[in-house]
Image (cartoon, rainbow, N blue to C red; front, side, top):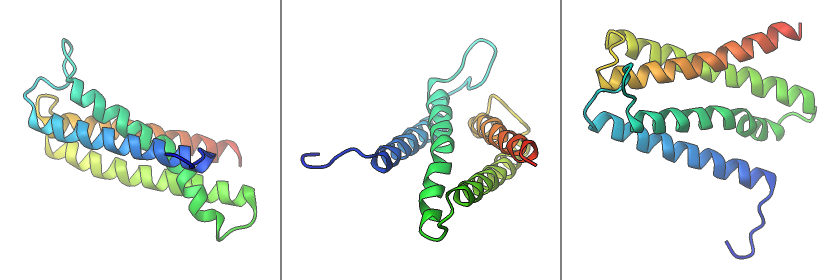
Length: 139
């Protein structure tokens, strides 16, 4: 990294990439390991990696969206409004996808796909709820 400075955009990019890598490794390892995945006695450590990685990606998403929108919109407040709405929309798609996977697995915590879907559903649901509260609170 000689000669490269770490500005805000680069740090955000590196954080998002690290989160994506952690989520991918956690997802693959969770699907390949034996259970239990989500139980009262034990939580699969690879499922924790998946959850932390997905959470990191969700946290970095509005900043990446803001950067992409910045070229098209000059008003800073409007860029953030668009980024937050897009962030909520992405999370809503995640809720639908993970919800469908969770339903298909019968919300089975002993099934790797079900455990991954439940964690994803909870995390995306938290973002949708947060964006909803933010939008309703600013009206």
